[in-house]
Image (cartoon, rainbow, N blue to C red):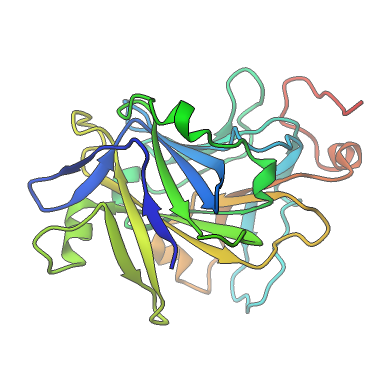
Length: 291
C-alpha cells in the first residue's frame, strides 16, 4: 500500500475531529526508493479559487480541450481531445473560481478559450480531478534538504511513497468534500490527516487530507483528499506523459446516461505540434514553433 508523509506540512485538529494539513499551496511529491519527483501543485487562493498547476513537467507542448462524453455511450469509448481542443506550447494551469467558470490559463501566455461552466466550488462533493503521469525523471526533482525548510503555510509538501519499486505510471485522484460530508464518512472521534479509504471493489488505499489555511474564511469548509496508485504505462510510445481531467458537470448530469456531459482535459506532450496547430489552432498569445 502506498503510504503518505510530509517533510514540512503542519496538521491541525479541527473542532469537528478532522485533522488535516493546512497551507496556501500543496506540492505533491512521488517517492520511489531515494528518487523523489514533484508532480503537481494545488493552490487555495485567498479569494476562493482553486488552481491545479503542472510547472514541474519537462515537456511544454500539449493539447487542452473541452471533451464531450456522448449520451448513451457504452464503454470502452475513445474520446476525442481534438474536436474541442487547442494546442499550446506552455504548461497551463487548471483554474476553478468560486462561481464555477472553470478554464485553463497561464497569465500573459495563453488566451482562456478552453473553458466551461461547472457547479460552484461549495456544491462539489466528490471527484474534483484525476491526473495521470509517466516518467518520474521528466519532472523536477525534490531536494529534501533544500525544500523541507519552506514555510509550510505558504508551500507545503506531501509525499506519496511507492516503496523501492519505480511505478510504470501513477494515477492521482483529488476528491473535494465539505467538512460535514467528510465527517459523516467515519464514526471515529477524530481522524486524519492520513486515512485509509475503501473503493467499491473493497480495495484499501491511504489518502491524505489537505485544506486551506485555517484563517482563510472563504474556503474554510473545504477538504481536498489526495489518493494515488501505481498503474500500467499510459503512453507506450513515449517515456513521459501527463494527462488531466477536471471541471465536471453536476452529478445529476454525469449520472444521466441519456445526456451529453463535458469536462476539461489536457495532454502533454503533443507530437506533430505544427500540424496540430494548423488543424485545431493554438491558445498561445504568440506561437513559438520548436526550432
